[in-house]
Length: 316
Ligand SMILES: [Zn+2]
Image (cartoon, rainbow, N blue to C red; front, side, top):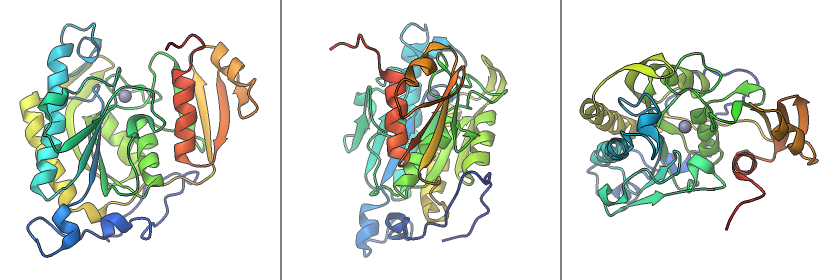
């Protein structure tokens, strides 16, 4: 396993995790060596797909059912995922699980996926954008990701909820979705091997979690503007990058945070923090923010999903 420099703030701990990396460590080469029983099945890959960081996506018109271009972008999202699947498979990847991690969680068109791929759809889910990941996976790929809500740059920069949140911090450091999701994967010993998105999100994510293969599909100009490449160009780049990522999968290390995990959630509005602080597990740290401590990242994720999803009038 190649040593690498980890760009981290001291508050987050990134451990050398040779032991936790056992599943990926058990797979040692490229495709074609049928004598290796582990490699015959190939590395198991988790793909989490968002929409804001897709090629050419710039505004709400592409990102939800009320947008005039949403139908076309469901297909583009699916094709970017397909490109990653094809690239990974060409380099010997085995089992693949895809998570539809945007909006209603029902954007990816299931009919377009190969029959041997499984898909996680809709909400709520305890592991949010990483539902279904566990220690049997060898690498995680993030497609269509975007920068976090504290980043002054980036198309549709937000963290988990552009409507309701203005920050999520882990051990005091602002995290984007890629960072939170990398830490969930890291809990299971799974490294992030590839990320796609705009230039701001890729730079921000490298600063948070270190090395991964990347595809920059657009240069952010503002929150709702970018200089973009075409989807067709993105499919080619994503396929190549996924192949590179799988072929050097043993180079990547899981991103791990210290446990227990201290999480701070900052709301746009006043009342969510005030009410959550009625519960003994939450401390109100200012007018708009609460802090809680979770045993580990899966527990931190379940609490975040509760905060984002619970409403007293939920039906059914
Ligand atoms: Zn997102």
